[in-house]
Length: 464
Image 1: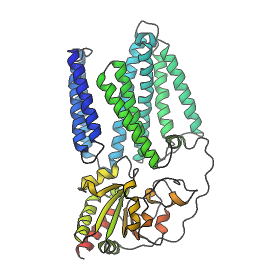
Image 2 (image 1 turned 90 degrees about the vertical axis):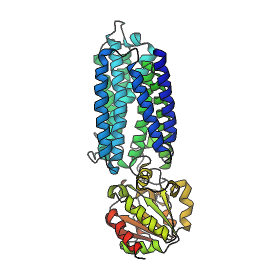
Image 3 (image 1 turned 180 degrees about the vertical axis):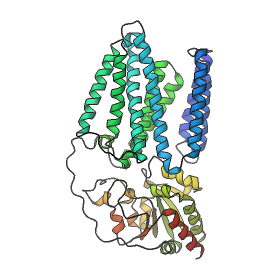
Image 4 (image 1 turned 60 degrees about the vertical axis):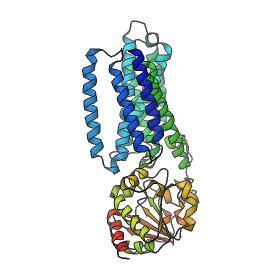
C-alpha cells in the first residue's frame, strides 16, 4: 500500500507540473487548471491510504474537505473580477498558513518526545527544514493577509511605527534566536514565541510596501508558500509536497523577478525601499492643461483611424466595461480598423490581471500583446485608447529623474499620433504620481465611468 501511495503522489506531481506549464499560456490556462485540479484530487485520495493516517483522523479530514471545498466553491462563484487579486492573496496566505500549521504540529510533537530536544527527536536536518518552513509559511500567511487588506482598501497605513525597517531587523533577529532556542529545547513555550515573532515579521515587512507594488508582493508570497510546502514535504516524507512545493516556489520566484524587472527595480528595493535611502530629487511639475473631449469625439477619432491600440488598466476592471469594449472593437474592425491590445506586465492588481479580464470578454489571444512585443508600434499608430491605466503609461518614468517611478519601463503611448484617455477623475494614479501624459498636446481626456463612456462610443460607432 505504501508503494501505491507514493506512486499516486508521483502521478499527482506530474499533473501539477503539466498543469503549471499549461497555465503559462492563456490558450491552455483553463486546461492547466483542470490538470492541476485532478492532481490535487489524486493526492488527496491517496492520503486516505497513507500508513500515517489513522482511522480516527478520517472523519476530521472529510469534514475539512467538505468545509474548505464548499467555502472555496462559493467564494469563487461570487467573487467579482475587481476582487480577484484579494482572493488570490487570501488563498495564497492560507497555503502559507497551512504549511506553518503543519510545521507547528511537527515541532510540538518533537518537543513532547522524550529525546531532550526537537533536533534530537526529529533529526537535525528535519528540524532545521521544519523551522525554515515554519518561518516562510508564517511570513507568507501574515504578509498575504496584509496584502489583502491593502488591496481591499481596509488598510491604508504605510507604517506601524517609526523606523519600521529597524523593527524588521529586530524581528528577524528575534525570530532567528527563537528558532535556535526551539531547535535545542524540548519545551513548547519557545515554539509559541517563535511563531508570534514570525507572524509579526510578515506584518512588519508588508505594511510599508505601497499598493502599486502589491502584484510583486503577492507573487513573492506565492513563491514563499511553495517553498514552505516543499520543506514540509521533506519533513513528512511526502513526495507530492516536495515536488509541487519546489515547482511552485521556483515558478513564483521567477515571476516575481520578472515583474520587478518590468518595474526596473530590484526585489530588495521593493521590500526595503525606505531603508537607508537617500532623499529623492524633486519631481517636476506637469506643464500644460488637460484637454477634454466627449465620448462621441473619441469614437469618431477611432472610427476613421487605420490603426488603434487599446491599453487596459485596473479602471477597466472596476467599471466592468470589458464586454462593451470588445463590442466596440468588433464594430471598429467592421470599419477596417486594425485594433490591438497592449498589456504592461504589472497592469492591474495581480500578475495577468488584464489578460484574464480580456479573455473573460472573449478577446482573441492573438490580439493581445505584451509590452516588449508592441512598444515599437506606437510610433505608427493613429490612436491609442487608454482605459483605466495610469502609471504604466506615464512618460515621467522616462523623462523625470525626480519621479517616484523613474526608470520603470512603460508603454510608449505618447509616441502615437493621438491619445485618448478614459478616466473617472483628474486624480493621480495608484502610485500617487501625477501623469504628465494627460497634459500632452496629442492627448485628449474623456472623463467618466468607463462602462458609460464606452457604451456611448459603441452607439456612435454604430451610427457611422
